[in-house]
Image (cartoon, rainbow, N blue to C red; front, side):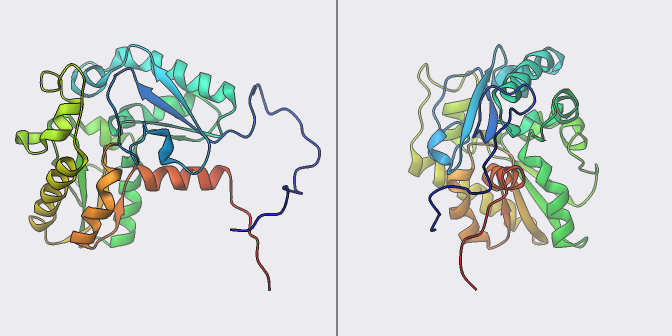
Amino acid sequence: MNYTNRDFGINLIRPRKNHCCYGMGLGIIILDDVYPGFPGDVRNASTYPYPIQYEIVEGVDIVTLVFKEDKSPCLEPIKRAAAKLERMGCRAISAECGYFSYFQKEITASVDVPVFMSSLLQVPFAQQVIGPDKVVGIYVGTKSAVQDEHLASVGIQLGSNYVIQGACDNDVCREFMNLWIEGERPERPQAYYDKAADEFVKHGINFFKQNPNMGAMVLECTGFPPFARQLQREIDIPVFSYSTLHDYAYSVVVHRDFYGHV
């Protein structure tokens, strides 16, 4: 893409409300957990072609957010992380785990920038584009951890045209469990790309085949995008992920300009 030497739409500059940094893009809330992510994973900064800023939500790890029944202790730390990202000048805020959908409404109400807490925000959109006679497959990390609040908080009508499957249920995707599941992962979490891709894609294909009227698939987990294209080649339907969510989020808060000719 060809660019001019600078954006001539920027001439006079003024401070944005209470913002300390400029030229920022997405602010992403990261779990207080130590595990690596392949390129494409939300916690791998090389994933993005636009600026991002991470903020660790202190004291909130996978177990606390995903598996504990009482999630109320998570709220205030998440609010603080969101507020810090807003203060730094991030134009939109997201989070690295789809189960942050539980707090979509609360965080939206706590800041003055757009909030995209979960890739599950795309489920109602996917339902609209495929029509009522097809279902959206929601491919999550752990199905048993999905509560009604996770879905309703992002506008999914409970009992509507969706089906859910978990990648880490029944010990299917062992490489993911090595990274995320307490009691399963080693002291230094690790995973092989080829093994993770093979397990994820095979299980995703089975999920698709079990639901022949599936018209789209939404990937909940931030660790799934590295393998999304491989899965899509096999099932040949629209696939929504954190990658598509973040690309969209950035595009609406920093709309692209157009360079060309007529």
